[in-house]
Image: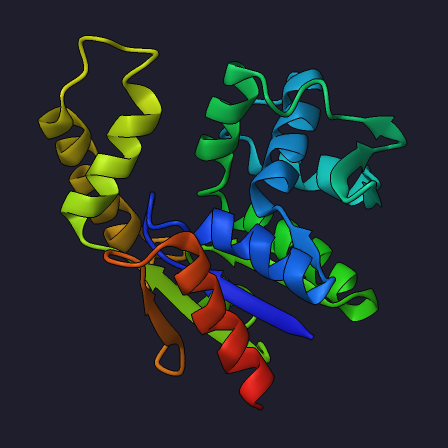
Length: 218
């Protein structure tokens, strides 16, 4: 079974995806970690970001495996555990850049589909229900007002940046929303058959129960 959860930044979709997976005893497949592992492999091999031919050759000759150890996802690249690298700022930045590349997106999609053939999964992102798994068993679009999302994001970031203002966070989210919605490759779109979960005025537990009740109702 595949449960797809999409939505804008800071709406709570990652938290809900993990909690949904844990509640149903499914695997939560972290798409971002796969992109970062690929970014690590490309960077390690000193391949230019614009060289699609070399990127394609590398991906065709690279074995990427996903394993779960104590519910922790680990991505192996040619047998190498990439856990120590996928959280590095440089790799995260490269992953964001590479995620726009159709060749890399196709590879990540292929990995996701292979994994979903073997396990029940919850996958979150921005195009999971529209592009990656258009035939997912369940599709949810987790959203919240811009104001609420900005407050949440600000609460997370303010301890590390005392000069940051709520308005700055709101402006950044608004810009990110625009870029996600208007990007050429796999833009953020609510699937027509997705169930909307608006978390603006709900606790995490209330939002989770809405998802679980929909899954159990069928």
